Structure formats: C-alpha cells, structure tokens
Image (cartoon, rainbow, N blue to C red; front, side, top):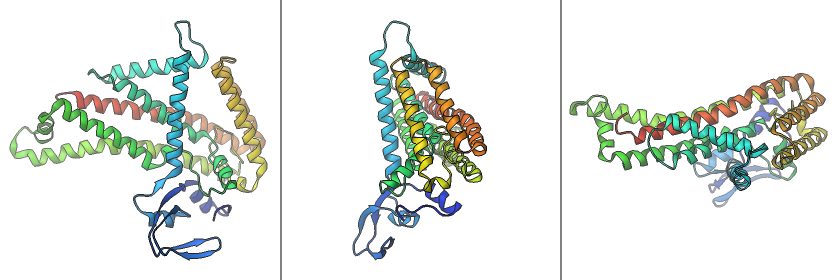
Length: 356
C-alpha cells in the first residue's frame, strides 16, 4: 500500500492514526504486498504494512515514529535551554531568554507549592516533564498530514507525528514516574512503606488483606491515570482536527496550528507546497526571535497572521473552524503538560512523607 492514497473517509482516518511500526513477523505469516502475496519462510524483522501486521508482530514491536519524534523533541528541548543558559546574563533578559526565565520561574513556584520535602532532583525533573510533554503536545498543532505526505513521497508509508497520542509513549512516561515513586517510598520510608500498605487505613492485623488490596489499587491507579489522561485528551483533540478537515475539505485548515489536512491533500501538491512555504516562514520568524531581532509578541502575531491567511486561501469555512479549535487546543496542550507535571510532583511528594 505504500504510496497509495486513502480513498475513503475510514481509510483516511485509519491511515492517519497508524504508526510506523518495526517488528518481527512470525514464520508462515502471509503478507499482502504490491506485487502479490508472500508467505514468510522464517521469522523476519520488517516494517509493518497495515494494522494486521502490527497485531502479528506482538508486544515487542517498536513504534519508530513515536520514538523518533519524542527523542528528537527531547533533544530540541536540551538545545534550546542550553542556548538560553549560555546567553543568560545579569542584564535584563530579552526575547527568548526572557521567555525561558519565565518558564523556569513558573515551574519553580509550582514545585515549591506542591513539594515540601528537600530533593534537588524534583525541580529539574518537573521542568523536563513540562517542556518535553508540551513540545510533544504542540506537534498536534502541525498539519498532521503535511509530514506524512512528504514521507509518503519518500517511500515511508506511515508517519504519526504526535507522540502523546500514542499510549505507549504516555504510559511509558507514567511508568517512569511510578518507578521513582517506588524508589523514594522504599528509600525514605523503608519498612514503613510495607506498614503503610498493610495497616492503612485500618490499623489492625485482621484487616491486612483489605488494606493491601485498597492501597495497591490506589498505588497502581496513579501511573494509569497519568498516562491515560494525557493520551485521551490529546487523542480526542487529534480526532476533532481530522473530522473538521473531512467535513469541510478545508485543505490544510488554518495552517501550521490547525492540525489536519483534508483527504484531498493526498492528491494535491499545491496545498503541500503552500503549507511548506508557510512553515518555513514561521520557522524564520522563530529564528529571528531567537536572535532578538523581533519580540516574542510580534513573532506570535506574525505567525498567526501567516497561518490564518494561508488557511483562508485553502478553505474559509473549515479553515476558520480549525483556527478556532486550534486556539482553544493551545490551552489543552499547555494544560495537559502542566497537569502531568504537577501530579508527578505531588505523587513524589507523597513518597517523601512518612504518613499520607
């Protein structure tokens, strides 16, 4: 199917939500390829062509696109904040440096309000979680078929660019937080952690099974709620972008922040070219802001103006709807990163307390 265009609404949605998966197909599996069917004589590591092959690969399959985008955005975070650290001085900060200092001060105040113990790891961890998740969520505001279309032209069949719409990514981050929770519970409380699980809330040996069941359920619910909350909200936002694009056939909607090209884009090179030019112009504005040539406010204003104009050219009705939803979605993008960060700090704070 590589290189084929989704012909129906269901095919478009399925193609849009499919990850680029690398895994091991078992011996005897029958693959449907462009040149016909092929029965594998031995187990083979390969890229999946469709959801059927993904299911056959099993648990150890790797979502290559989610891994690449999440790691790449993490590296981008390190580069940007390293740049800000090198450029910072005792003088009044300007432009991007001022923006970074505002974020750091905001995270520092949030940690101070939610975490009462002393641990030098918590504030940097909170900053990393917030910015990393924010960057991953922010990819939802990129026209989600722009990159997949370019990748299809290069021969890559699937490309999902929003890591936080992949439950493997969100649950993986939640699992990391859970491991830290267990580590600090055992390190700080020692045997008291066992007593906490077995003698709380009913402080009597006869209620140990009941206490243990209730406490384990509450403990395991924390990482599940963290991961599934982030995934569910971002996935729902992604689906709304797709449905608006399909309903109004709005081309690239309202632009880089609109989050969804319509199905017609798969056969329309003009839309791709127009959005690529718009994307490059927005990148140029961001670069000018990093160099302190223009203010952050002007950068945001000019970027929104470019995106709105391009969206209007490609389709007024759907473009305006996607623009409205995209502006609202910016709040969701920021809020979900903040909620994940705050709950992580709160859970780790509970692990540092002798009683909770």
